[in-house]
Length: 439
Image 1 (cartoon, one colour):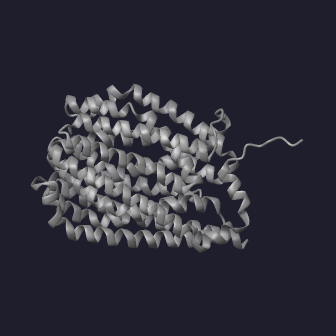
Image 2 (tube, one colour):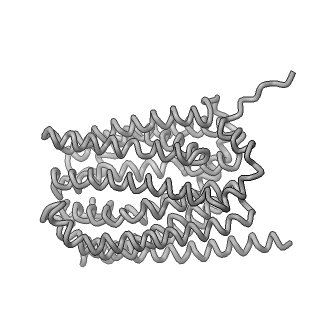
């Protein structure tokens, strides 16, 4: 009698349709999955924008700047201490679907331990960053949520590798619930800094619980963590980490710098936060190309199909980002003052300066996903490290004389530098693959 093997549902589907997988990819699945992911990204962007509008008007530029400090620092710290575990989960579950359950369980256990260490250090970290007692207390509260943030990311990473549609479903939950909470607080006159932070924490917990339940149904029930899997998880994760940390510096350090430089008023940081948020509206649809390409390239490594996936992803991302940010830049002078308030007029010029860089940023995200799919995250790491150094140098040089406009110029220049580096790196990967195939 043959033993019963617990095979995840997604793996059974892959095994049943293995012969037609490549053909389906070439015909329609990439476009279909990308369109679905782009739709969810746009929905998340829209609910985030509406919530941001309520926050900007209700909190004002000063407290809007404080909220940047409270929410962005924990995101950066969580990304640093997780050592690329979420991206590694996507890669290895895609490459070794037969080990999806132990890989997911091991990654969750490791992330929980890491998150608890950050949570225990939350009051100390907050005391180093916060400008006042209210910001320090709220920052400590969000940092205490790090175990939830990281483990939820692992469950969602498992879904990205196995079921794009279910991954999209879980991603949209927190932003939508957060918007409902913000609007409700505003409606009843309870929208303050602490109530916004509490709403963020509650909705993040709800998203994590949902991701855990859906991942259990799709991938399979949790198993005992396997210590032998920590090495491949963190080996790949460390390579991603070498790119994710510099990427955080490249993308977020402008606002983090502005949040701690005494000569920059919180109101100016609030203006810059609005400009950055408007520029990021071009990212949801464009970066969807990379989210779909990453697991597919990992699954089809060495296949001729990967070149088609790469070209479609980069062309689609570039055109989508350029058209979106162009339209936003045209509308901004007429829309920002009446929507956000007269205190946000300075954000329009900052947006214009960020616009070209936004296109490069979208392409960088997709290039990074493509390189990770090829198992070459170190190229992305080198490019982001170069960008991090350029960002810091340019920010130190441009913020003192030009304020938030200098920060915007520094960001755009950095995104362009990283783009050209990553493009050269991808061409070298392609050349190496073609040489190996010819031998």
